Image (cartoon, rainbow over all chains, first blue to last red; front, top):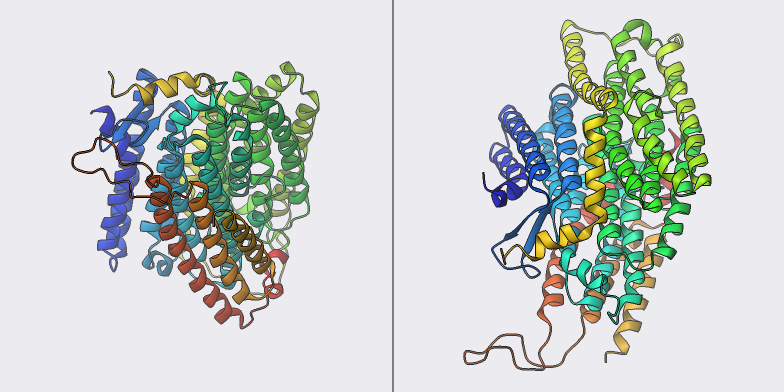
Length: 507
Length: 116
């Protein structure tokens, strides 16, 4: 398969899948079939793309054959294809979960096409080589998130969606403003061309680049919930059903982090003496505020939502240290976190499906009734907290050792301390949901029919699928760590990226 | 004219942020619309306003005749207007739905999900 085609397919597949779903609007079963087919083939394409990128280096294509920097560029390096693969994995897992874990009304009102277009937005954001297209793809993603969060129209959901829409609209406006500033400074929108111009030491507008970068830091900071811009996240992520929130919580904030890492290694490379300490301080606060917030919560999903914020801090820490090992740690940590966080949300979904509540005080005794579920949660939670030999440990180990060798001892100490509190939070969920006796409360026990039991068994499947992946990258971390290191090398040596895009037509 | 526009954009931004922070739901709609307008206008002005011909190349020319307006910010602007329009439409429907469901247009009533 030709390289150009391979780069366009991750965008076309979900689009066509979504169109097929829309054609079969009344027939939910067929929608599910088409969505399933799309997810499986998308998984294949994402793995093919990763293989191709590993073998041939940075791939790029010009849609419509206009030469760079004028055409629409699609670029894939190891980092972006790893992101695609991770999103394909959790997309597939969440799809499996939704088959039994989502009510039919929501399916009827376009759950499947929305999820597919959301996937398309994610792949567009990861593959695009143009800063305005980046904004457009982010909007594609966000409008799907808006619709998915408010899908079903429950009171809580509407509340969450209102906050989510408002703050993300503001963030998009800031991004657009940043795009405008960047264009007025350099007269180009292609990332590779911008990177070239930003590396010319005598460019007259170079000193103003920091202003543009601050617009992007604020915009993407809101979207990836960095301190102090995170309040919308715990206010909205626990409101939609799990088949929605697992995907959004697992992926969207990390895509924001992906773009931050991409932009700050490729374009905003001037004036790093000012930006990196700022990022370091922000990352420390993000970590701490996340776990402290989580400690105060008494809802299964709200605790997990707050932990998303603290995990974002780790990813930002890798970017702020800015050494090859640290960036590799960030890459590894993002991938690990996408899988683990989605899995924890799925486990919370299985619990919620069975007991119809997410409140810790009403839950209990799950360990006695569903020991497998308890095991699923325990392994994922230990992985999130970063206990060796699970996957979180490797990410944190890379970040910590990079921090020590760069002399940033304070941030490493903070991150290790935060890990401990994460473990505390996970222990709290374990105690309250799984270990303690089920409280006797007034509402009668919900009848479980034979069909319900089979249904609940089926919900284990995606969680086991993700757990297998998590254990794999935990116990056999070598290949992924190597890939993360290669991705970091590609990120920090932007001449590879620039060369791949700018000199494509000349070959 | 060009010196006037930045002040207008600044006013639009500040008014929109004030409206978004207001607790009335309708003010939120107004704030979102004005914020979208302000960003669009910013994009337009920052690309440089040229009073001149259009950037269409004549049949016998190789390059357009100077001075011509830069078409890229205008193209961006068109896209941004369309996207903003879509999102604003969605936001208005959502806000209407919120108003119908909660029977209130006071934002202070919408913190029930926080209390879980």
